[in-house]
Length: 264
Image 1 (cartoon, helix red, strand yellow):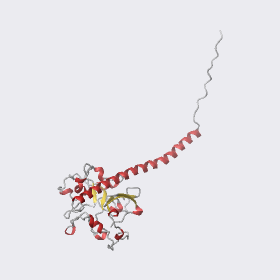
Image 2: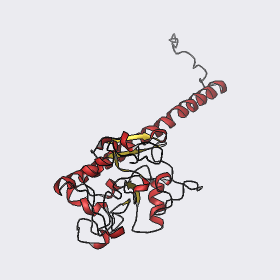
Image 3: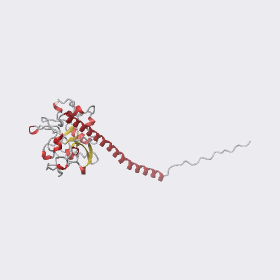
Image 4: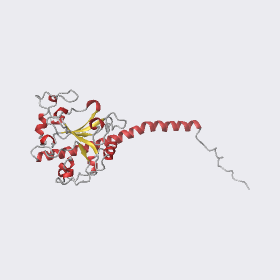
């Protein structure tokens, strides 16, 4: 009897990565991680900045709708000073939809609640990139959280003409400004200059006068729990060294620290 010869080949030795190959793969993975991780972070911040801009746009449009329905005047009164820091109504537990609630009448959210429709959640009033400012402002007062501020200067010397455009109870009371009054702050005949030496007369449109912006220690240091600009725990500008601004015409724009809008 003849045996049929086997056609099977002998098994080859098991292949494996050499040490050099493994080190090469690890190095490549490290290089890719170094490239991708900052990119992912930048994408996330871009998304947060876009969400912040959307918040400011909705708030600014609600302010303009209020103004249109109230003889051209901004929301506010001459008996209660609207807070410069914009309180988040989700943390400030007063019923901000009820404009008769005295405790909340100093908050912008109270004044414009009826013009926001269903967009009343706390997320609307919170910059998603400013968790530190939110935390610090809340530490000093558990009913307070501030990540946005109004262009609500107290005196003409600090920039705005007329002062306190959203009204104030100080000095016998000043009614909220009309949009035409805000525009007059930038009238060509106005000889004043802002804190940076820029002439008010160079700012001739509502689209160049800001209404509400991100808060940080540079523009809000020393108020509502925000550390001073020189403090070790100072709150930086929220968006890659810049801020989002909503203007009195409703538009929103991002500005780097080197090119901030005037504060007329």
